Amino acid sequence: MVTVKAPTKRRHHRGVPLKSAKDRMDIISAYYELGSYRGAADRCGTTHRTVKKIIDKHEADQAGLPPSPRVQRPHNYDAVTELVAERVEKSAGRISAKRLLPIARIAGYTGSGRNFRRLVAESKALWRSNNQSGRRPAVWAPGEYLVIDWAQAAPGLFLFCAVLAFSRWRFVRFATDQKASTTLALIAEALAAIGGVPTRVLADRMACLKGGVVANVVVPTPDYVRLATHYGFAPDFCHAGDPQSKGIVENLCGYAQRDLAVPLVTEAAIGRSAGRQRGRSRVVRRGQRRGPLRDPSHPRRPIDRRTRTAATTPIAAAADRGTDGVA
Image 1 (cartoon, helix red, strand yellow):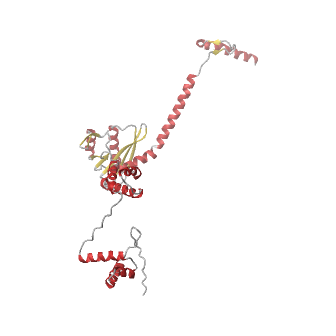
Image 2 (cartoon, rainbow, N blue to C red):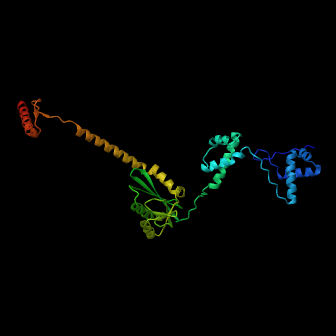
């Protein structure tokens, strides 16, 4: 009798094929029939260690016992684990294993660089899992948020951008300043263009709308409160140092800076260049040295500037008369 074992497609993380349910039942039956691990292993085409693991697990399941915990093997980097965790915490998870290895060597680590890189990677992953911001994609509701922000396209040229969060409706206007009056007027213009009022208007902590901060809560200015009361929306502000919470409008600001503002900036640059060129030509004309006027009949005799009209008129008349006489 020849037993042919068909290879399975499932594989362990180390590349070793996993046993299917049928293979495990065959191994258990062979063990109870033959009574030895090696005999069952020879029949089923596996090793006696695998047979022992399967039999132990089967007997534990039959007895209702929990599986025995796996014994943690010691590592050669256990002595510097706390040092690595401290440096990863201090650098906010940015330090590399290359920078840490010399420090670990001084602290007594004698293992390979590969094992140490594995330790640093595990420490970084643990630090990130414990210190992650927990940010999730925003779920917007219709008519809930209008997100606003300012962007600078060029010196003296600013962009006011607003986005309806749910529908992605966009609003962009150019301005020459970021004053509170300009911001409030553009918010009113955006609401007029929308044809309605959202529940909240979300902005970052821009100084023109921020009256103060109390317990990390932004207090809007009185003018902004009056505008919000008039239109019936609630002012809302982002947390400090958290631009991702309004990334939907940051994307619009970047697009407006890269695309919409280019024609205006280009035209302004051309206008400034032409103005500078005209200014240079005027300076050159004004800076040209003007010499004394000369009498056409006597090139070496200068003409008085105050009497050049009287001096040149008779000469021109005489020249005309002489010309007429010759003709």
